[in-house]
Image 1 (cartoon, rainbow, N blue to C red):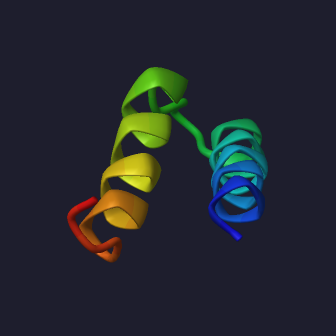
Image 2 (cartoon, rainbow, N blue to C red):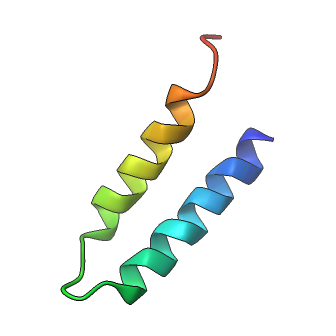
Length: 44
């Protein structure tokens, strides 16, 4: 489930990066998407 969420976050970040004008750094988009996933996960 986590792997699928990460892949979806990467795909969404890349799609957003390709559509924005002016472009937003993809590194920032990925960091934000992964932080949002991490925030929803319980502490191991």
